[in-house]
Image (cartoon, rainbow, N blue to C red; front, side):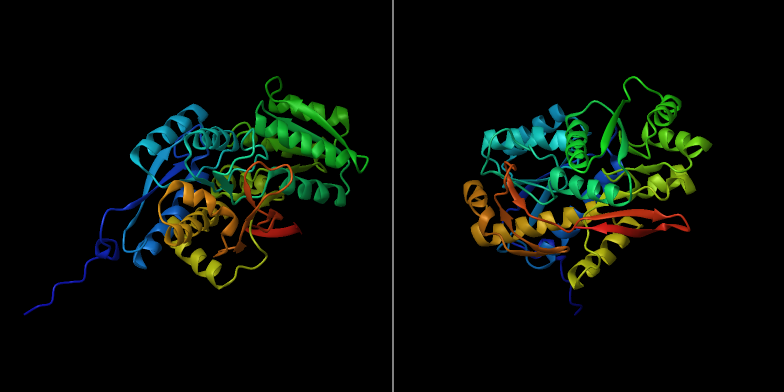
Length: 370
């Protein structure tokens, strides 16, 4: 008599599932590639949790909602997920969207572990309900300013679109560079086209241009204009928000997209867990995983640990943030209260300034670490 095949691990778990709501930008104007990587990390970790027996024998279930970079849509999704009975929220990449989601989660008493958004003021007031894995913008962008000044740049132009996130970044850069005698020149992309940006760079004698704009446009068009203007051959183009991290950047810009420094949140070398997860993520994505995919994986890893230890009660989950001590793909994850940050913060994930190697655009060069 033939033995029937063993059921998948998720089917072996007993009882109703433990649900986590996932907020992810999966359609435009959201940064779709970032959303795809974030979701891949979240899903891989859920799969592994269930392979290991779930949460006390109950399967972990991810309930995904597309935010499309829309704060109102995200807030409505938080309401819906709360009504569905999710134990906690995870995810989100866009800072302005995460801010709206965090405010709604806080008002509803729904724990939210934010994966990727970096805006310092994720909530207006200190909250016990929200924790964050990504480093605060003031931390990462100060390291980026240190890199610029160390590379000899003191007249920095920023091509910025209207946004709380971009305005916050501009302020951080201005304060950091002013302390070293540097200057930030603001170029309003609501008023200028890429050709006008080139004229402003020449007129203001800027040695570096930072792209505080949406991707792919107008960032891609600005890069092409500057790269092809012989007067600006020595101007450094930078993208602290990380646009060059993703393969779409290299596909759209080719050689023009290399040597553009950006921030990413990875250690110089991954440990055994990180290396294993990198391999699994590469198989799932069909390409090298970005730091955003690791953020997604770590988010579920933390939530699963909390759920195993404290159950699915929302208040108990929120109370557990200061007691978290979980080995993630990029180091030991613990949350603390950090001055100026209104949520429980991992202080700090590793931060690098990297760029794509002009000789081999598929390879990243580490330029600065912190």
